[in-house]
Length: 310
Ligand SMILES: NC(=O)C1=CN([C@@H]2O[C@H](COP(=O)(O)OP(=O)(O)OC[C@H]3O[C@@H](n4cnc5c(N)ncnc54)[C@H](O)[C@@H]3O)[C@@H](O)[C@H]2O)C=CC1
Ligand SMILES: O=C(CO)COP(=O)(O)O
Image 1 (cartoon, protein in one colour):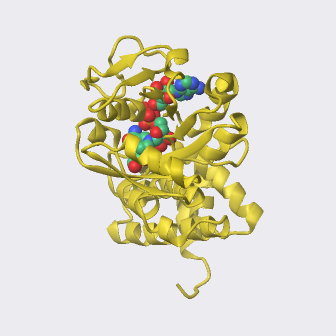
Image 2: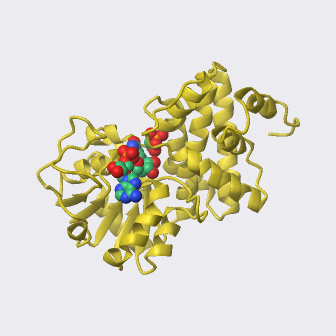
């Protein structure tokens, strides 16, 4: 039995995938009936039971499919229910309030949990359709990681396991910031060459920060880093990319859309300053999304940086 908390696009898609092979309990804020609002037309398998939070928390493995900025508060309210569980963060970001990654947020609120993160290149709608998808399951406890990999893999959802939680978390967090910047570049009509340059320099930022924080290089080159950066920076299915695109053309983005890169840009820019890590693209996204600079200023500032070795 797997419990899933959060019935947005990702929680709903994971319920559909996992419910093909095993019993799943699902709770979502405002979820009544079996319609996943963020996945129109998707049908939950029979093995998925929509129920209350207490029933979901009966499972030993509980997936937390909430936005990164909502998870701390949610766990603060419900820590008692989740004590001692295997808790898998299914979100990407750095918590603005604490500077912690998702598993750090889990352990701050539920110290005796076994924390892991599920991350990597996957659009919820692809998972929900049963299209082939590969994700990273990162867990500091190798044995728990093996168990979770078995439990959460399906015929179409292939999980690779690692123990480098720091690398997995920073890859997923920073790629959303760079995806916003990629959207801006495309929206402003700067061209595909500029986007390729931005993605590459963005990847360098991801590596600089993550390696400084203790990540392993292989993780950043893998699904949760490079893989997710490529997907998110190049597809209009990505909400972070679409948010940037709207900014680039000077239009308003859908205010109800979950865009993790906005808060994460602020959190990562703060971390980078604190640790003395150079992250100019992230700093630009943070300033742009706070309307502290104009698009023209941002482009001029990035292009006029001192020339240096790659
Ligand atoms: N949608 C996608 O393709 C993918 C999303 N993710 C990650 O999954 C995480 C969740 O995103 P989505 O499901 O896509 O977002 P979403 O906007 O579709 O759903 C978020 C859900 O969280 C609920 N929620 C928000 N605040 C809450 C709170 N305080 N208490 C209880 N419930 C709350 C909302 O009601 C909503 O149902 C994000 O970190 C995202 O980066 C990861 C991979 C793919
Ligand atoms: O994380 C994702 C793909 O791996 C989804 O990206 P968005 O949150 O930008 O839609």
